Figure 1 (spheres, rainbow, N blue to C red):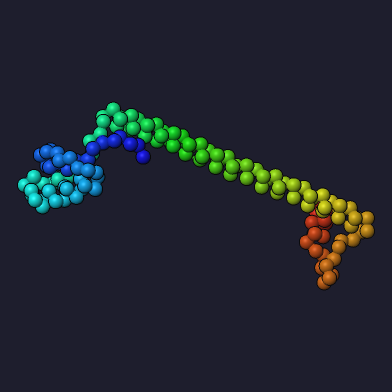
Figure 2: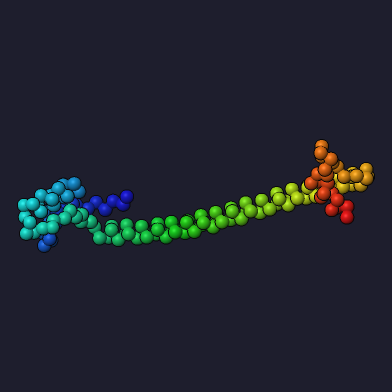
Amino acid sequence: MIHTEGKWYCLSADGIPMLCADEDDAKQSAKLADEDWPNLAPHKAAQLVDAEALTNANRRIEALERENAELKTLLKTSIEQHEIVGKLHQLTVEAALKECRNAALEEAALKCKAYGELPKVDSGVPSALAYQIRELKS
């Protein structure tokens, strides 16, 4: 919170100020003044502050908003880069698994070629691996 050390007033509709102790007092005074002097209503609680302090505070707020926007853009870029790295990692793992699978199939095919037959599962039907090995042989 930016402190501007302003005084609180109760203002009538025509701009006549009444000095108050603090914000709550100004709000309460405005409510009572509306009841007591309805022809000068609406009464409002207002804080008068130094114009230079307010201008400086507004400039600081604008600078912080710009910085916040830049940080949001940087965060978005970082998230996008993280997602790209994740996808590359996934592709790398998939490629390594495919390479290992192919090497295992080639090794199995060579063993089957050496024995002259395809591996069978318990039911006597060639396994899916055997079908892949058959394709490698041809």
